[in-house]
Amino acid sequence: MSFCQPLYWLRFFTILS
Image 1: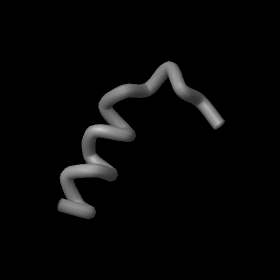
Image 2: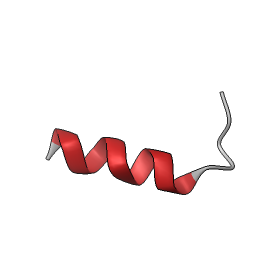
Image 3: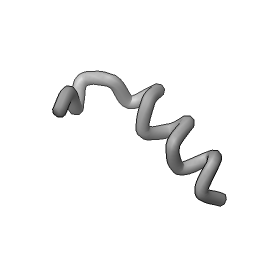
Image 4: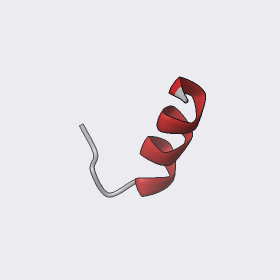
């Protein structure tokens, strides 16, 4: 898992929202 990619997590949370 790469935690150096905040954009990826941001997109993931945006989809969940």
